[in-house]
Length: 146
Image: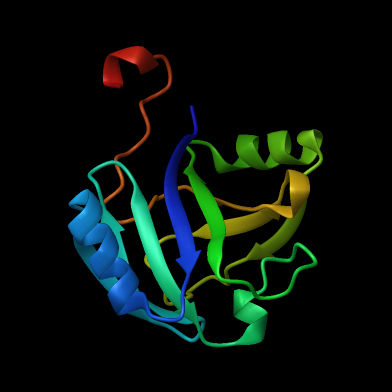
C-alpha cells in the first residue's frame, strides 16, 4: 500500500523555517540539499520527510497548477512498492504525468511527478526519502503498523 511519506515546502528562508519545525514539532534534521533545483533542509519526525526548500529558478518553483511559483506547500510524495502498478493506477485515475528525473540525477532516490486533482503536484518514489518510514509490506495488517 503506498504511504504518504514526503511533503515539500517552498520558503524564502529554509534555515529559519526548518528551525521553526524543529522547535515547534521536535523534528530532526536528516539532511541538506544544494542541487541545481533548490537549496534546503530535510527534516523528519520518524515517519515523514519534510523538505524545506528555496527553489533556485522560477521553473523549479512552479507547481504546474497555473499559479506560477508560490510559497508554501509545493508537493507531497508517496513511497510505493510497485512503481509500474502505481503509474497504471495514476493514469487510470486521470493524473497527468509531469516530470521524471533523469537516470543518474544527483538525487539518492528516483521520483516522478504527477498532476492530480486541483492541480496538486504528487511525487511517487520507489526508494523513499531519508528519515521516512518504509511502507508496510503487501499483505501485512496496516492497522498493526500505526
